[in-house]
Length: 137
Image (tube, rainbow, N blue to C red; front, side, top):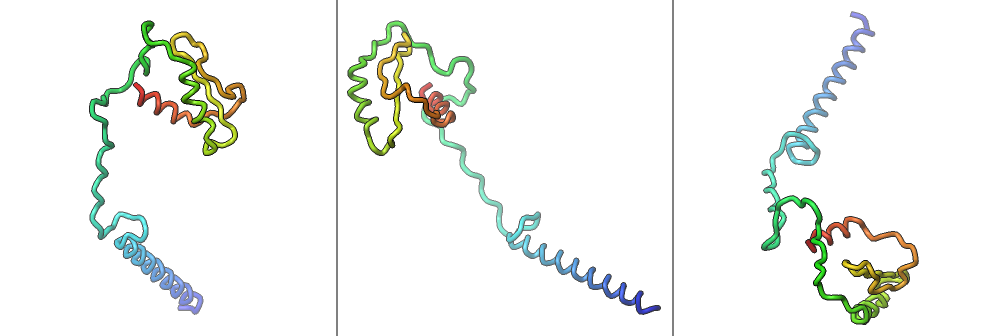
């Protein structure tokens, strides 16, 4: 057997030992939950409880209109009273310098309150709007 062949066998043996040591090391780390894998020594976590549902809420899927149409005999909103409540809230410095609002009568479409509503702005998160709509229904 030549020295070249012995050298190849030595490198092959070193490679096999390295692979085995690496595999055993990874298996040990996996068992200790230090790395991802199929082995584990810790108990499985208990599943999270289901999301709470408000009393009277329906888990049925929403179909059709989310909000009921406004009744024609609904009370007419008072624009002055609405402005008296909203104006101080919109003036709060915590809201920042660029605040606008627009409240529209749901039945007639007439504006009831406007505060810098003509200034274009990026809307708030659409998800917030959908969540609010779902909560109001």
